[in-house]
Image (cartoon, rainbow, N blue to C red; front, side, top):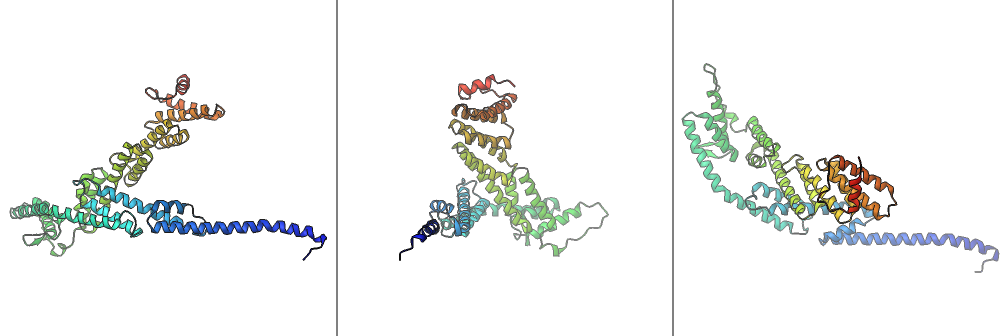
Length: 408
């Protein structure tokens, strides 16, 4: 069909408008197809346990699968963290790998398996090894525990016969903490604990007061007051940062408080693992990772042994100084600013290096950004006011000259 000459301009204009729309539609179709392919590749990588590839692919997923991709990323992160913490617990020295630490590792392996039962790094195999190791530890400790309990029982019976009820109460309740059903003289340890407490109270009453006979019906049920006292003693040791005492005390808690005691044992194990991770990473000069480990430890107990919050701050300072000497002045300035926000212990050093970073950037840009120089002088003044002297600090003479000539 041949269009009349008069309609040609109209046709050309309509065609010109249609071409971009067609191009946009084609582009959108291609983009959606690419996103679908990326999603499928990411899921396949996750299924095949190629977590590094899967994470990279999921991070780039957009469109209809973006929310699902985010959940996959959360699962990958949680899985890797659970496996790493469990592996770290299992790598502890034999004298530190007690039943509580093994319980903690077992729980973390179970968390990883719940996320992906056939995931990488053999979580099921490691779980089986941890369970077997726990059984071995319990088996090895059983003879010593049995011998100690027999000794306690013998002394308990003698103390009871001699009416030394305070001593008998201590021995009976120690037996009950180990095993409430332990049989001593034909009675369960928990029942004996209650009886000896009652007899000790009767013996301590003033003469002439009316004694109250022990209630047999209460012997089969743990005394809430006694259990809370035992738990509170363990918790007090935890709050006082005496983790060794707290660990032993929590392991002996029975009754209603036992579940809470196990949670505290898990906290202690995780805290100690994270603090050791932080120290090792710091030695390897991986200050960013070390800081993250200390910060995670601080979430469990901010004022815990080893001062995790303080250590996290120092890692920011060390990272900033290290980045300065690597010539990464922008990142160094951020790390040092983070330290100043978290701590004031070594703020003089932090402000000096913050000024050095800003002045180095000022010189590198040919002195064009005067605000950098002003920021540097401000930080230098704070360092000088704190009495900082850059002795034995290998900094450019040009920077040192500005610092030394600065008046404040």
